[in-house]
Image 1 (spheres, rainbow, N blue to C red):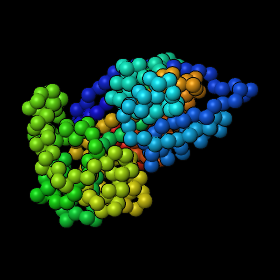
Image 2 (cartoon, helix red, strand yellow):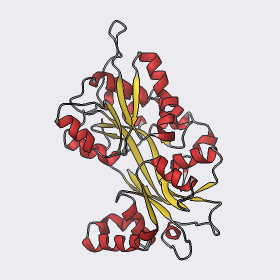
Image 3 (cartoon, one colour):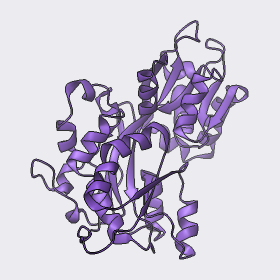
Image 4 (cartoon, helix red, strand yellow):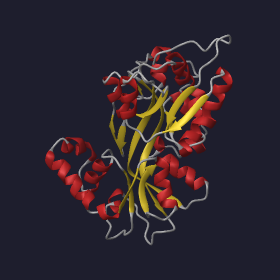
Length: 327
C-alpha cells in the first residue's frame, strides 16, 4: 500500500497458514529470516526475535537483503530454499504470490488481538494478503541535513529544484515512488498520478523532471545507505525511510524530515514455497505479528504497527511520531 498525503491506494486484504508450536521432545530447526538490515532489523531483534528464540527454542539467523523477488524465485524453482521467512514490500509479496513462490496464508490462524478482536478485523485494511501478513507501515520521506543547507527545504518540489536548493541528492534505485514524486512535484494531482503513468507521455514527463536532478543524484539500495549518505556529507538531502531517520536523530545526527507527499508503504512477512521448515516459519510469523510483538517493535523504530490493538498499546509520545499520524 502506498499513500501520497491524504490519497490512498488500497491493495488486497486477505490471509496466513498455521502450525502448532514445536513440541519439547522435537528439536526445533534453525530458521533463516531475511530482512532489511540496520536499525530496522535491530528493532525486530529487540522487539520479538529474542523472545521467540527463548519461547520456542528455535535459533533465528537474521540476514539482510535489498528487496525484490529474484532470489526467492531462484530458490523456489530450484527446490533449494534457504530462506524460511522474508520481510517483503507489499507489491513484491503480491507478485510472488501470483507466481506461486510463497505459501498461502489463512488469516483465521493468526492470533486474535489482545482485546479479543479476530485478526482479520484487527489488521489494518490492505495489510493481509493471500500470502503475506503485515508487520509495520512506514513512509518514504525526504530527509535533509539541517546543518548543511543555507535554506531549509520545505516541500517535495524543493527536492526537485536544484537552482534554489543546490547540492547532491539521494534516491533509491527503483522506479517506485521516484516517478510518482516527479509528477507530483510537476503539478500533477496525486489522484491522477497512476492514470498518467499508464501512458507513454506520462512516463516521459516523469523522467524529464528526474533529468533536472540526474547529475546530482547518488543512488542507494538499502535503507541504511540513505542515512549514511547524509551522515557522511555525500548529499544534502535524500529520499529515506522515516524510521531510519528517527533512529539517526536519536544518535544525535542533525537530520530533518519533510513529510510533504510522503509515500506510505506496508511490509509483510512471506514464507517461500518448497521450504524445509514451513510449519516453523508459520509459527514464527504468528508470533512476530501478534499484538505484543508489533507494539514492542514500534518502540524501537518509528513505524506504525499493522494491528489496531498494537497501536492502542503505544504511548502518545510514540504514536505522534508514526507515519500514520502525519497528514
